Image (cartoon, rainbow, N blue to C red):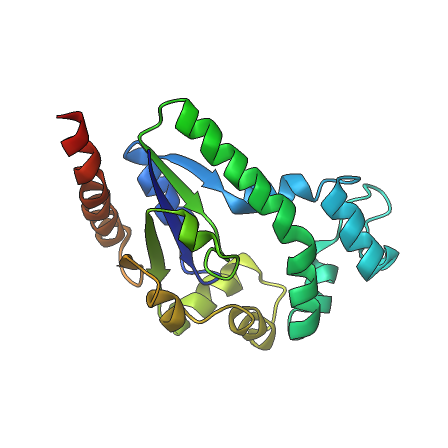
Length: 206
């Protein structure tokens, strides 16, 4: 099985690119979905975050963590952000690795792992190829305003700047997808990468 790690910055279009790989036949592991599962009330990661950040981040009616309140704590404070990552990354990484092994046993040919912090978490060393989804800052800010209309431009920039820069991520990339323009152009780039990474497997099958 071939594994690719899809990463980028917030608002760069990682999920869109993942869907395009799925359309071509890849099995997708979405780290955000894994993170949400791990942060369900009373899971170990939930307990750890609540214990450190306090009851004020919990919605009383549902016991779920209020992501907006938690974000207000950590974005703009590198120490708290690192602390949060240290609490939630281990169970998330374990679950991702477990899912990869399940797909490998099931005979899947290509697994694409959508992980915003692929490089920061060290998971880039565990995949065969790293795909970085790139976008210009103006488009990135506009997309995030559409996604999070309650956030100011300053708050959006805090979230962007809290992550490793796209230029740094590109240094780890086997492939870079420019997602500044049309979906058609993005899809063409995805198709070319898919064909390239599958060449080795096709050769093995022959």
